Length: 484
Image 1: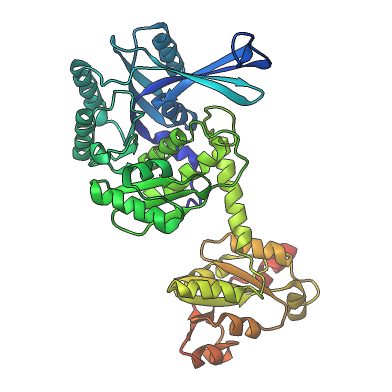
Image 2: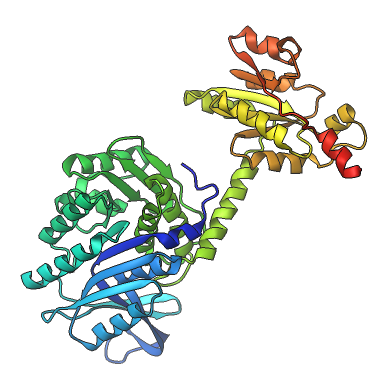
């Protein structure tokens, strides 16, 4: 599971069909400086009003913002607010919106009244009774026409009457026949209506309501998710766990737990919409579910740092991915007194440990080949790196060309390398004895008897591998050519 090298621009090719309850999220901002003489409530002096699509409309906003191609099916009322919502959705780039007018209900509006950053009141204007049969048939007919052009389907169920069980059944069955994954943002305790879904995305309160299992840690997250899937035929649960991140629990296979992307939280409004949108776009772009969930996790970490119902922009997502990758690279540089603990954790997971070492001054194709062969011989590769002082003693006062931190960072950026340890001695024997590798790798310009630490590794059943050399590749040769 990795997003290393992932280009956010890939999401532009994802075609995502969304169906669900559309809402206008209205924010009324002002000042509350006095109490009403009529009742013990604050008087809000309105300064500005902001409106944006909410519910499945906010899912569509997130798809549009990230550059995916969205198709939206939803219901509005025959009112001015319905026209307003249609205009807002029509202005979103890359979105094709098909809104059905229902005579028996108003367009849903959620109005939040805010003063000094605090929400004073929320007013919901809505009807939640199921939509009429004839309208339901028209909607299903329209969805089926669009389904064959979709890479993924999102069902955004806010319990407002559109996502009737019969409509849900027809959508999931048609998508299954077409081989299109269905991602459901669920509502309520009855998950039987989502039977056949590829992924459902409850939060911890919603899964507790559905299963009665309180999620407090990774183990209970898996327990609740598997209990849900035991009751209902759902292929995978992506459980959003607020400050504890997310858990991806497939029906078949190991669970993956993703830590929350740590940042200051201003507003969680709409974060679930961001998660389902990025998850669907990622799956639609060809990512595995766990990788798409990781992408959604990054996006959620960004939007909760914004005020109001927000979206994530491509440059923000790219920056978050780059920052994390830099942190992961730096985290591979391990102090020599901590590497034994790292190795012990890996061994506890049943992983084999490899070791190789060198100066790695001006990384060249010969180095890359050695590291690739070493990584292929084990599950986790530890690289011992000569310190600057050690290199000077071995190579002369003009070396190294790059200092030890630069060399360590370059090595850490390689996928084949799992840990880099700088050592100050002339040989890595002390480090080898600390790591106790299962496999010790050196270039074939050595014999097994000449490899430092070879006898020690073989003494407990490990083995020495001599990697094939890449002809005419050496740092000394590269430096000589540069200097002319």
